[in-house]
Image (cartoon, rainbow, N blue to C red; front, side, top):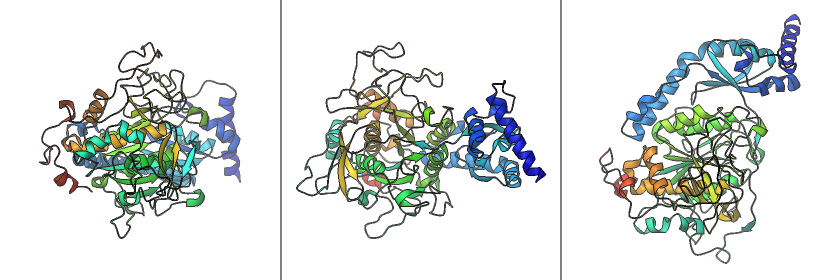
Length: 512
């Protein structure tokens, strides 16, 4: 009883100190203020404990291939976590606090109260305690739905697919073969006719979801439940985004940019609600996919590019904009292109303001309409929320009235930068299938797409950069398109493992 009274007193004292407006102590400076305020009201809060020691991944840039980069990054991240987390985990056990360890960055998720927050922040091996709020995404809803039957389905490729020049690459035999795309979203209806045959876990006669699917939702889960052992979508948003990446049912619904690519998925939102932890867990899965038990991680099975059509706004509690920065940077270091939707908070300047679109390591995407005009809702740069004044978005893509797959075998139109990002992911897959020497070289991939985008300007000046400049803070470098023939800045000569640029037969045989 005395112990419980002491903990309660410490909790009240820690929370009331900040509530009274007193200057933060050393330990309080290491804690997101949102956490202590929440702990005062709710008693228990979820937090991400970032340890002070983090893996040095700088040597990954000098490695030749994506597989070498992925293996090195995975081993360094795991080793750092294994060598440093023991004492912290021991204290959490002694506290009786629910917790979960991660290596994607050296961090631990915990549920505790104000006294626990103070005890953890006072540790010399803890760098920072981030908030882990539940973020409710304002996901777009379909404006029109059809059932995909022959009578309703178009027999031409969707307008966005044409805009990025996909049919020209298809005609040359490059449709994304040999490339794996990853998606973290509300989940996926893997049985959808436009997606099933593109799923890496389906061989045409049987399904194997090991290394191809992960569910980071461990409680709740809506119609999918928690810890789903197969791809499931309780919202529809994820199924739509994956369709724009790879979708093609073979019966006229050519909704995807790279129908020759394979896909794997991770659910990071519960009925549209995610947290920094669920987002991070999916990034960890993509660096080194695991079996369905979350064991035996294998970085050789990681995707080449991943789509992130979500954000983490301060209005929902992501008060520290750096909360996911290290996670995204580590994923990129593993040789994976990280595509992120810029957000739907336009048309004002500096509305690219949420993780992960704000980061330099993210390839951030604005939205355009069928006439290549910027969507009014598309967020603009520069990024000011972290003080960087970083230009954003990097590029734009089709994102208004985009028709794609929806759960249950249907199709529908959605608008948002959520729809634009998948067009860029598909474009990356097409480019890599045509020029496999670029695999694992994210800088070269992004430079190719930026320098060959359709230049677009506007009358809007943001951050002192006129909209007539290229790049600008409205469109980035312009609307994405994959050039054909590939210019010199999109070629990398001989692939490190001996495949010539354009040798799709040999390359596709290596798909993990």
